[in-house]
Each structure stands twice: as structure tokens, then as C-alpha cells.
Image (cartoon, rainbow, N blue to C red):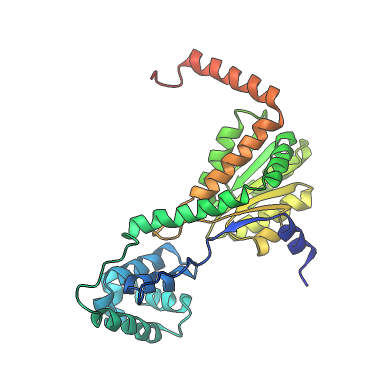
Length: 312
């Protein structure tokens, strides 16, 4: 049985998440790079581990027969890093991973000459394709916008409104806070964890705040989980934008918006989370149109007076 927190998170989650496996093409057999990408897409890999994965994809027919020492040297990582990569992929160690790679490589070497090239495109194009899939899932979620609208209204009423994003999630939090300050009178941004975050959350609640908007992108930080627990303990409700609908971080949220992240490159990309943020901002503007208009006009006057922007 799920815990009450899990049940609450599941009930209120918008679950676009990571796109499901695409329907297989009708080609006779997948190309080696397709097999490798399918193999590497499952686990959540660190940036260093993705470097290894990218090297294997680009040099499969040679890399599959390298020793662990040679592979580590080619990629520019340590031998223990290669071992950790293999175990992260679900193998008992590098020898088991190499055996799998060799079967893929031998299949590539044995394929008929002149076989048609993959139609999926190169690595960068596939990264774009993955983000398009994330956005398409988000579009399907937006067919029922009630949760976004209701949450936007709640965030709009919370004064102050606190926005939390630690580590890699800080950039998303800064984007949201920067825009929200144009339409909300008191937005407080928290991008540092530990006691700094705790002080900010407690002060926000004491000042009358009712909601916290938090971002939790992979790799999920322990300090984010702790901060959410502090916020809930202080009496703040939590709206969360993350890539996982279930788990300890989502369990601490009252509302969970799950959006897929792009994980094809060494570092994640965040097209869907940014659009999710913009949708919440739109809902906030619609929640109090008179305040929105007044604040935007006031800001434009200040921007014009101090020449914030270049003339077109």
C-alpha cells in the first residue's frame, strides 16, 4: 500500500515524465548505435558516465574489444569509473559489459555491405528528437490544464512566494523567479542549501507565505529532499517540478508536475521543465489580471526611464 504522501503525490501529479519507448521500426534489425542507445537510455548516468557511453556509441566496432585500461585511457577517465559505469548499466562488471558490446559489434561487422544508414540522424539530432518527445508528452498533459491553473492561482496568492532550486536546478528556479517578480510583489529565491535554505523557508512562512515552488532535476540532491521536509514542517505547501512522479522527493510535495528531461548528451537539457515553468507563470498572470497589468506597466516605465534594454 502506498503511504499517504505517495497517494497524495500520485493523485496530484501530471505525469508526462520520460517518454516511453518508441515503437520499433519495421527494419529487419536495429543498427548497432540504436542498440547501444537503447542500452544506455535506461539508467540515469552521471556526466562522466555519459562520456563513456558516447565513446562506445561512436567507436563500437573498436571499443568493444578494448581492455578496461585501454578504454579508460581513450575516454580520459579512471579504470574505477569504467567499472562503476558497467555496474550502473546493470552488469556485474566490465567483462560482462564488454561481452555484450562485442555481440553488438560483431553484429555490425557481419551486416550486409551497403545497408541503408539510420534515418534517426546524428547524436545532436537525436537529442532534439528526445526533447520533442518530452514536449509532445507535456502537450498531452495540458489537454487537462486544471491542475496548472489551480496551482498558479495558489502561487499567486502566496505572499511571499518562495522558489527553491539547488545545484543544477538553480538555473530553472532563477528563470521562474526572475519572471515571477514582474507579476508578484514578493518572490524569494533560494539556491543555497543547508541552514541558508532553512532560514529562508522559515522566514517565508513567518512572513505569511503559504506555498513553495521547488525544482528537482537529476541528479537529485539530498539537500533538496531535506529542504522540502523543512518547508512542510514549517507549514508551507509544496508544488514540485521534477522528472520523477514517484520517489522520496515527490512524496514531500502537495502537487507534482512531472516533465521529461533530455538525457542524450553529456549534460541534461530542460525544454519541457522550462515550458512547464512558463505555463505556471501564465496561470499566475491570469489569476490576478489587474495586478499583473499594473505591475507590468510599472516595470516598463522603470525600464524605459533607466534604459534597461537596447532599442530595436
